Image (cartoon, rainbow, N blue to C red; front, side):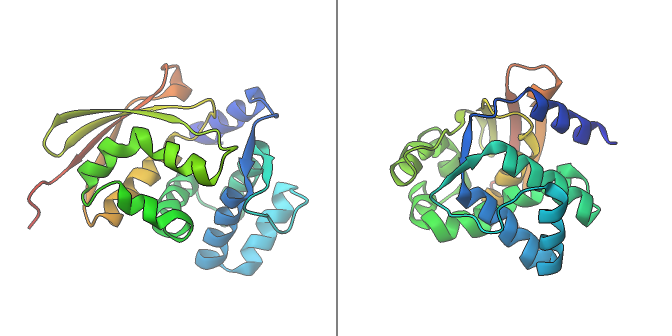
Length: 205
């Protein structure tokens, strides 16, 4: 078992079952698997995960454990690392789910990647209007230099570092910018929170 997969499983054991996540998240996992790998693969993921629900209601809350189990099962069924599952899901969330469900909020963050990243600490306040029971993470942003931002990610949910990595990649694609991302501090390895170093070319081409 890979280190990232083991870390993920250890996080799940320690996690509080009472914390809930909207069904929208599980719908997005389903959409990603069906679109990229087909309906049969999704049925195999459901069976491997042990999740009893076959359909998810976007506005209904489900235990976070359901999402953890679906992601783990997707890794096993599809034969790809859990890290790659989470990165792909983060990208999918920005480029598909978020655009469909609250695309106007993505656009309200500003016309450039820089603008949106600086807006990110306030972004979830807007999303909470749509999903009032949301338990969002917190972000702090430092602009180190043009095309260079340090993003601090705080969350009670463990094991989502690579999901956020995928979100950042998705935001770059959304703004037609190629980003490079370095994880400076990694909560699952003992840091207080995750810290991402994000760079992009200010003058591409």
